[in-house]
Length: 198
Length: 240
Image (cartoon, rainbow over all chains, first blue to last red; front, side, top):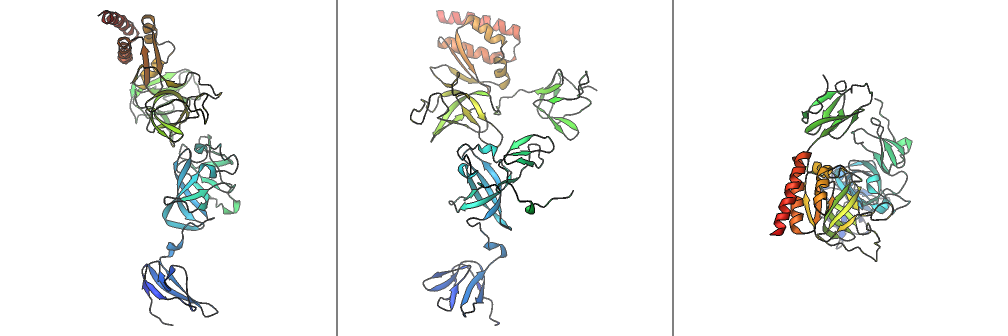
């Protein structure tokens, strides 16, 4: 099947939809026709029932966006008494090329005692956190939550600029000055930790 | 070579541990504001005079007007805005502080406190760190106001340097003792450099304000002289 490669841009009509042609990823259905929604190359894949799925494949990394219930890694940018804003760096195992914005509300930081939370004792700007996407949020940012034991601050720097070591679920300690700072610490499963031997 | 105690130092000057070793062989040195330990030496962060106190405390006395919020400080703020449940109060720091309407004595959701935009509040800092906006309250941990709250009924609010505010808060302040012997007045000093004065009439209030501002660089004898002259001048003005 040496069909020529069909390059398309968003909106381009690919073919008429019917029993034999089904829209796949990167396409949408309009007025009975399959249109492309990405910049890329058209790919056909055939089922056992001879049904062809038309999909458009763009750049490799384009297809990853945070979806509901995904575990994301984010960096905290702004802390407020009511919520904290962060930059989503990766979704699951895939790193994102452009950072999306996320927001964690005060009520979604912990599962217990949700109204007596002090945000400056949970997160600080610069912390790396593991969170779960709760909803697609508004036009500004995704809505994230850390209300689980395995979610929260994964890595943070202390006041003296040294990475801190977790002590309890709410405290981390600086190895240089031995001062303890408050954070909502994530209980990362040991098999996900890669120790650096220096 | 010993450290230059009582001399002016500039940011960037460094000392080694041996230079700062106090005479009576204490192993631990306490570094106060303006000094910081970096690798194997001690760096100066602020321009000022290096001070020392026994047993082994070093710090830099620096003249500054810009207030940096610290937890527990009592400050005077000006209410700028009312946004929903909180007031935005200007305390002279880089960000405006937030004051919740529930942080006044006897205030509940139904019984709101009588605070308007432009009011002066004497309050305490509850939350102050470099990552977040500061938060102030007009209530102590037992729920009582203990002197905090809106300052009413006139008076005059002015802004001084932080060093003068700390001098006025000293229990042995010569200026306030001398003025208290000659005038009747109320004074409220915030650690953020804001001072509120109220005396019997306008002439006395202005005279007190001027004497506080001018006393910053005077020593105790000059202050006593100045108080005598000011009280004579006020009496003459009131007769006219």
